[in-house]
Amino acid sequence: SPEWEAWVYNSDNGRMILIGSDNVVYDDFTLPGLQNNSYSWQAIVSPDGQIIAYTLNNMQTQVQTVNIYSTVSDSIVASYMIPSQQGQYVANSLELLSTSQAFTPDSQQFAFSYSIDQEWSIIVMDVGNQAGTILLQVNSTDPTMSAVPQVAFDLPTIVRFDGTTIDFDLIQVATEGLPTYPHFTYDITTGIVTQNYYLTVPGGNFSD
Image (tube, rainbow, N blue to C red; front, side, top):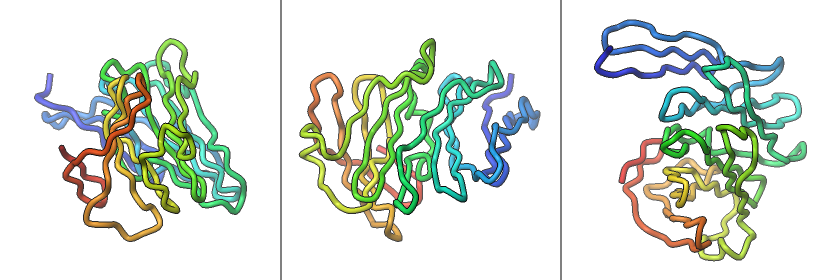
């Protein structure tokens, strides 16, 4: 076995390559796509390497769909169509950050977010035995999120999800990037949101 393995993703055509430190290619395939649809800039691989999340964007209608692909069955096992209408400004967290920690450590649940104009939502989806089941949806207008600033074109980018808490940065997607972003922890068991501090680097690199 190699010392490490890494996925290489091409957003132009959805190609995924798994390469090891021994320079051996262990997997090479193309994520399922649709005509007139573009792939998301980022693809997120689960900790066990068996699930890949990505989005397709219809270039004519601008409808975005989050897809959950299984490397075991070589098929899409779940999908979520973002409920937007033509002419609305839509963004999703898979465009901004690729981290396996958007999956729970057991790779059974996946957290992502999207914004439509001035409102956003966080979704938790089952990607295991009941793939596609929505386990949680919380919106920016919900009382639970009253502690989070409401600014136009914000998107809660998922940094970490452990099954109990969701850590996210609130990023203004319609800007060129800010030096820092406010960071929040949402405890889904208590419904409490607290602000804390992470060192953040605009452009997709995050560390605590």
